[in-house]
Length: 457
Image (spheres, helix red, strand yellow):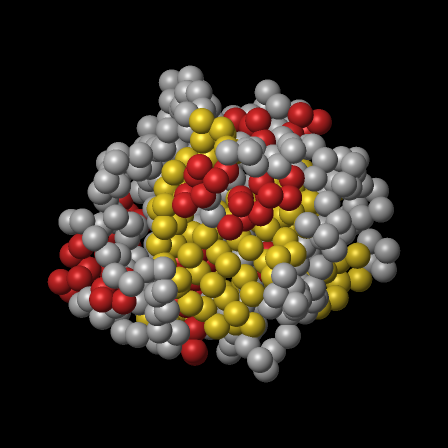
């Protein structure tokens, strides 16, 4: 069953050559929206499994924590007793070629002496609260793209386009969706050399996601700010005390992202327009770009966006072991890539979204190919090409279901550079980091330039 509305069903039959519209299209008709309670899940994916049963039907996901889980602790792996069905290596990858996506194919070809894919039984574990499903039903009827793909109107709380009609709408489904309204955490990041040596970065961040604030009713209530974010670097010493403040905008053409940075060296807060596009990512040592964290978080305006089709692929999924407090960073971090003994791959349906740089703009990546999980719309892996059109970097996200909320997403992600053998791994919480995804005490008054000056000091 095709996912998109009747206006593009015929085109989907020609996968993978699909190229959806990139201009604004009205929300879907009421009869189409009813599919969210019929053949589609409330998030817009296909309820049915695949023909051979290797992808199961969606039956509601994980809504109840496993026995023994306590709120505020590391998430117990609900599939801890399972063993890999098989392992893909450079030597046998041809046997599975039709289900290996581009990023994993490149990692196997480049680092096949150490990189492997342990493939497990597939679980369609994504679940969200019922009030989010209700928001999705409303968004399907009202949500629209604004300003040539650079903004969203008439949607709120859930996915803005659970039955999308264009590449821009698929992209905005990655950007927007339900998470805790108020969030805080402490995490570690590393940028290992090709030999595996690294310095650990430690940071605290917190956010108020206005998109999920129950006091609002629609996107127009948000004053064009869908999230407020602070990142405070704790170590190493040479960067400790740096603080970043971001006001993330909903319409990025009329009002671009607002950012400020406090530097303990100057003891001043400055506007930081460089926290955008292809400027080096914060605490990344130049190994990734500002718009690459989380798969993609930048403005859409420099690329054209085309949905290439849907495919079945082995992707990182239910990676509870990778977040375990039984692992040390030394066990996770290997030369050239993370230790794949702890990465779980499952077979799922993904949408392939391609971004091509517009001739009138510039970016270090001329083309980007994203693979978005059908059930969550989140980017799970990506290919990043340089100005010559050659593959430069690939990314992986390592999602789980935070079943105590419940919400589906990734705290941890990696970006792998094929030119120098380095990689960036962000979002580790395995050692001394406190586990706290709840932060009811946060207030919007915190997210000001004056506040980050105080935090930095």
